[in-house]
Length: 212
Image (cartoon, rainbow, N blue to C red; front, side):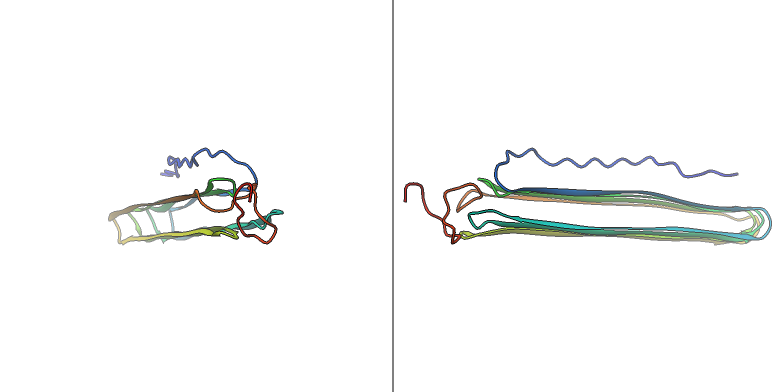
């Protein structure tokens, strides 16, 4: 009996709306990765795996000495194997990971970051003699900063999630392992003071009040 994987997890990432002027940067990524292995009948094996990576960065500067940069990286890995004689065994994995970040150097300076990962895994063996094993994981990092003559705004966050499961047995045995892990992270900050992109700032990067 082939059961198959069913993709039934949805992660929605929403960043709060921000009024922008001057330097604006935003970036995001998303992974959706199902992995399924199945073995039945006489002696045999089945293996499978996925690896996905993302990495990007950007920076910008303006005429008044504002410098903004942001970057994010992530790696997702999956591996599964089923082996045995008679009966059937399988591993079903689903991984979803998403990240987004946005920043504005306008007044007020605004920075927002979100990242989430949801991993599910089922390992099953029904009759026959054999094993089913699987493992998957995700690690992601985000960072962004705004530097001006009046100071620096910066934020960084990292998330990681991993799971592993194995079932084994002899003839006529039935075994299963079910796992789910969910990790979410969010942070934001607003700086309402100091020189901002588009403000009356001197070319040296120092803040000059209006009508100085």
